[in-house]
Length: 433
Ligand code: PLP
Image 1 (cartoon, rainbow, N blue to C red):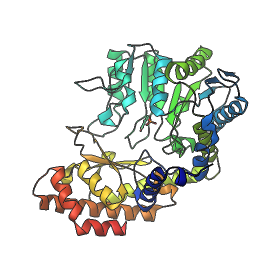
Image 2 (cartoon, protein in one colour):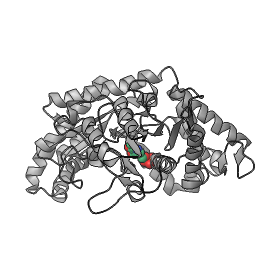
Image 3 (cartoon, helix red, strand yellow):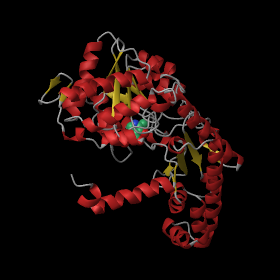
Image 4 (spheres, helix red, strand yellow):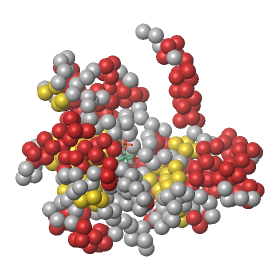
């Protein structure tokens, strides 16, 4: 056994630099979190050596006695973490990520060229929910299926359920997908179920972003209304990078659904499961079932509400004026700055955020907003007080960016950066962060 720092100092050095970046800065990317040491230990374990195509007790390789035990444990913990009755719900824990979980789900539920409806990407939906542009079918979910996006009501920036129902009457989808990557409010699953039922369509929720909050019962319960629920495991759920697919076992042809989901994951979309990751997911799910998890989820939401309110107090506009969950969409357009500029300045001072389209944006290339999330800082035990301070830093970032934009004498990002990189005020902010 040669430790990494001896076997490969170059990679070790990169890991150390990234460790410093993560711990010295403020992580506000809504899709990220800081997972525990126990999760990382399982993720880096010897289980990575093993092939185990198939399902527990039905593998294509020998030597899977302990891997079978692990996968069964992970399934049991997944159902427990989401308060599901094993007689009514099953779960496949093998997806490598959220995107593969979603594509496997589409493969299981509908046929090539069948119709699906998901929230449009510019309105906060995810690529895998059928995204395409006027020029190109960008994702497999729009290449292999016919997709029609639903959207937000421009006056409230909330999902327009009435319009969605009207559009579904014309489009007649086989599948409706709910869930989002950038939507700060909760979902009305009952309304979506009623629309899906009008067309005998499946209803799938992708709770990748909010699953940690759903497990804590801090948001509406999608399992009450949906046929299939997918999630990533590394966002609010605070696990390693992977995906899960939950499927109903109490439908009329439920056995068929279970078989379809399992066969869609393997062999249709994937090969051998990543057993080290399944072990790490199991550890994360145990944490998400622990008595302290609800307090964590509550704190994530309270921190997001505090950050949102403080930004409003500083005079800024937020999409939907606030949040119900862990994320905030900050509309920067009234300030005259783009999301890209604010993202770059934040990088320079050690605050990590991402530019994001806001409702009504003309161009996806230069989005007018940024997305903020509170899961990672809450994992570092930061509460309302620290989030008010973060809002103050962000306010100073905007003020400074406006000043630098003026100094640059141009609206181009490269001119702006040239000035920003030399600015003493940027360096001072970096020190304070
Ligand atoms: N679904 C949603 C709603 C997401 O936000 C994301 C990623 O951000 C995914 C799926 C894809 O997950 P992954 O990056 O693990 O493939």
